[in-house]
Image 1: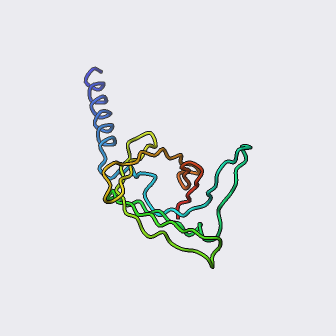
Image 2 (image 1 turned 180 degrees about the vertical axis):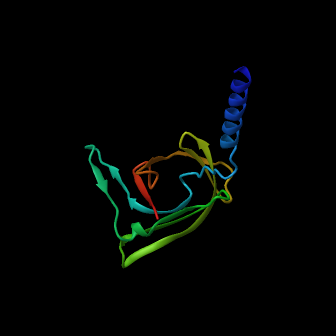
Image 3 (image 1 turned 30 degrees about the vertical axis):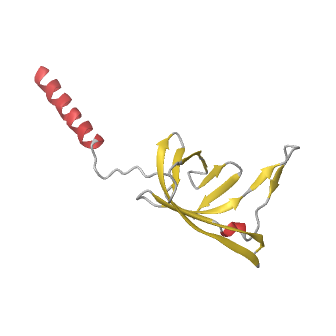
Length: 135
């Protein structure tokens, strides 16, 4: 009986070790991918949210790559026919844990630390009063 229990324990430990050491499990950062602006605005002095989103600003895009690079292209204007890009800005990014990300713009020496709140199964995130949606 003692021999069978030792064998059973050894087999169980081997299975657990094999399952827990799988190489093909990759944890993907939820920020990876392409994001489009969904909503932006501000809260006025009465505590009311003022939505400033229009067809132009909705062209704004963020791209976070797995190699730690990030690009931003923001658009501004009154509507789709009066719309200009602010140009593409390049960054590096790093996940510091607890939804805190470090962003360093090319040419700068001090990174920005931002806290991002992911929602809808990580298909949206909010930073301040701006909401981005994964494409």
